[in-house]
Length: 280
Image 1 (cartoon, rainbow, N blue to C red):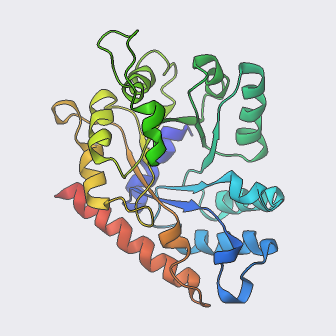
Image 2 (image 1 turned 90 degrees about the vertical axis):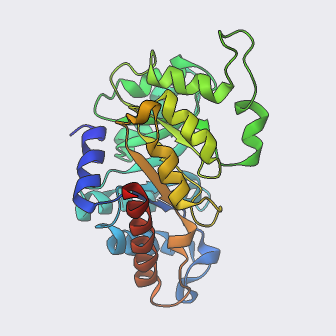
């Protein structure tokens, strides 16, 4: 099944726009395993088990595994997710961006080694750094567009004098992803929940693309405003899915033995807030 089809199916089956981010930080683990990087798989698998029927996607952040030499645990976790929640697509948050020959290797890493259904990419080096991922026709790729960090303004908010209309850089990325770069309908965009006006602008420029929106929860993004912005496109015609990510607020909802149950409660609450906003 193609990534976009998986995404649509998960949205319907779980009645959800919630993406559960998996950013394991051992210093924040429950008291019984706190600081133990050997328990990364156990912690994340428990979160997956508790939220599998609530999520439109899971998003493991590769740096949180690699920093602790836990790539093997990530491989086990990917296998676990495919086994217990085959209906939920997995977005590997890697933010790769390199020349074509290297990008080919990164694509193998994401899609063959880890078995991800989609990956996040930086488009800064241009289309030839994105194209190798699109050769994996059943997979998806999310391009960084308007990110949630304040420093995103340094480049993403600058005008391009050499492009007709002098668009901001993030607007140009959105147009490229909606248009000439999206050869096989595999692309999506990353837009931060901390900038709802920019989400609305990106949605107007890219009404058919899935938007991956981090920043809800611990980063301060407003869930209801995020959904409304992500669903308000040109003349209200939006075909692209809105995927709202929450990580820390779910993962570290409790430091006790009930951490998985607490994560489920927060995930359920967040999912319901997102759904209510979509229907309002």
